[in-house]
Image (cartoon, rainbow, N blue to C red; front, top):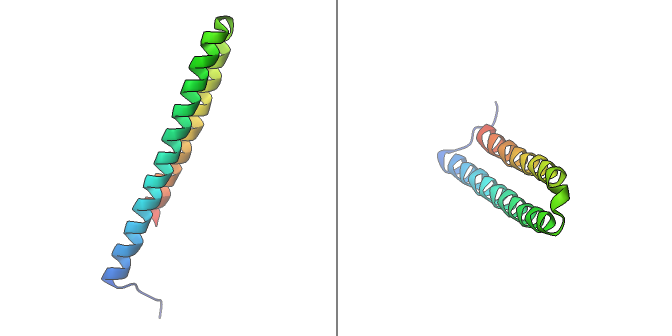
Length: 78
């Protein structure tokens, strides 16, 4: 017979998943904030490379957000 969690165990497991998702979003937010600041600084120092810097920043931000979205989906699946 498969193991079936009790109501309290299910709530604790769900709560831990939500905390994990929150931590992953905080990490993504910090990473995007640092990247945005560095990209702005780089564009101020070398305005002629603005297009390449902006493109690279957008790709990095998209990857960081994708990781946060994956964490959200995994929290819902669990």
